Length: 204
Ligand SMILES: Nc1nc2c(c(=O)[nH]1)N[C@H]1C(S)=C(S)[C@@H](COP(=O)(O)O)O[C@H]1N2
Ligand SMILES: [Mo]
Image (tube, rainbow, N blue to C red; front, side):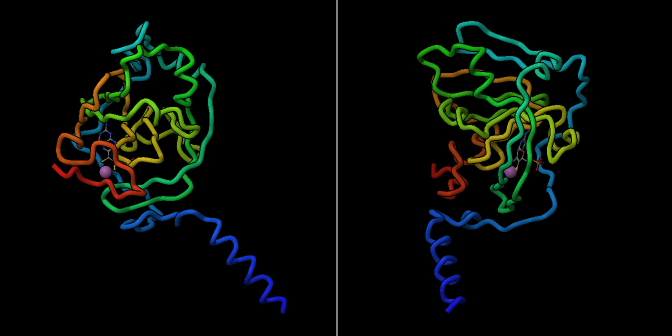
């Protein structure tokens, strides 16, 4: 009798989940693979700068001190990489894009952002996707500063899209009107990249 009751509760929980935690075509990994094109840039914190420009009222640049003086937030999310590995429960710390948006005024025609990185990497994300509560520019992962190979001193983190949208060694956001492809998007990755829809590669 007791086991029947707990069985019912368990079933109820499963049915409350709209989707499984692991998206289709992904497998879980415990370690953290390192993936990037090109070499790891050497970035001096004294020279680090984050530039916000393009279709905004006033361009803005942060130094490392400006960035660390902004409200700091910790958020936990899962990573889903297009190469099929996923990693659960990553605690990121840094500045929410929501908080950055309080300091800037995108022009009406601005609909997308191109993230730019030291080394030349780029990736495009719609502005609306940056307003989620867990999208940030992170400097730490699971309580430790990011390692150089994972994007130190700071990287974008856009957890609801495949991980190529999370630019390592990030140094700016350019506001643009059109959905212009970034680096991997130009090489055939999907323009948007929703792991729940398996938007891995573009169809054209
Ligand atoms: N600057 C930069 N950022 C990047 C990349 C890159 O080549 N350069 N690769 C992307 C891809 S394809 C993935 S899967 C993740 C990998 O991040 P990780 O090495 O920390 O796991 O970084 C993304 N951000
Ligand atoms: Mo990737």
